[in-house]
Image 1: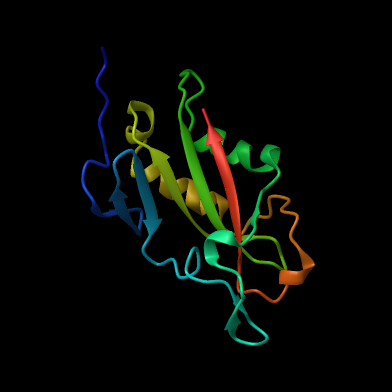
Image 2 (image 1 turned 90 degrees about the vertical axis):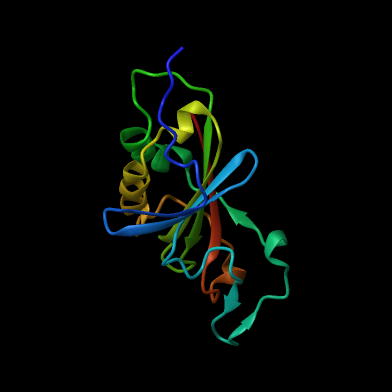
Length: 157
């Protein structure tokens, strides 16, 4: 049996490549978020009225990128081609409703040997690769004045 390094044993802060991540380890899930994030899961506001939408945050629609567009970036950075795992990483994104580009994001992943052995440097590299890109989100025009919309992608490997 091969034991791999667990980079996320503790809750706290990890700094890598000038990005500081807050790490929160729940029972079976690790939450990894750039501490400079100001949007994702913090309330979606109508910028014209400067008021929150009258929809609870957890009920607000999720928008999904075209998998073939986003998966290429993740495969190149995270997933080693010569290994087969049965794991997943959820990427939750703040998407600009006008340009459909990713403004910020965070990662949630299940605690298993394959995910906890991914160095934080890889997540920083992935974050930089995804920010500012349009992955083919189909957004609702009724939310065009929102400060962001929630994008979601589940990467299974």
